[in-house]
Image (cartoon, rainbow, N blue to C red; front, side, top):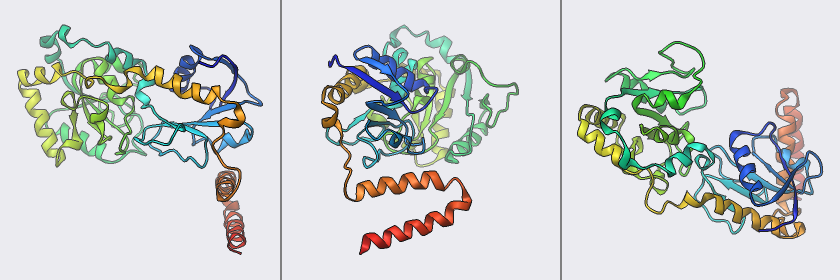
Length: 330
């Protein structure tokens, strides 16, 4: 590992939980100084209005925590969810690896479970705070499962239990046999912390989202709506698990992770990825081009972020874009 001093800036302040964890892991191996000005490296999310380009001399590393495919015309390197290869510029690291629940799941020993006690828990939980940007399938499934038995919903969205903000989600989920752990969207490779939270307390996740889930987890350990032709078929299977204790116990005995699960060594993968970046002379670590259409594309994106939030400037922006497009065609 390189021993040189690293001047690093995280664009987002305060740090997200996953960014804080990422920083802690990097500090285990690298001499990191967090700076606010003149950084050599910036780590950020593409949702921060292109702020990485406020630091033109910095190597730009995008950290994707949402269902977005990395745009390598706007960053030198990226960490994301997609299963893709792009030389030394990309690392697939699912968000759940940076949650403490993942450490619990890695250390899980299902041979020691009290299966009788776990089988005698309440039926199913649901904890969602915001349904505005989510695929409606999550809401549809919640209502369909409630037709069989009440699903206790303790989040701000579809709350049917009263009370205020749920302070300890893990303790709440642990009281139930099942937990609806849907992603907000269906996107291959996109698996967040939602599936980890029930696993950490030995509650069976009812999942939907990443159709490639079997690359990360043992598919026999979860109920995955993606594996069924309809919501009804999935609900029928949950009914069978709920009404047959032996069937439920057999499901719960299944290991959460597949044998030799790739991300058990996620720290080493992170260290190797960043060591490749940090160990190069900075002028050799850049991957973006300052010439050709790529530079114009970034300029236009940044202008859009600056102008579009102000509707009175939209007409001005469109006029400017059309003018530049005509100039490029000459």
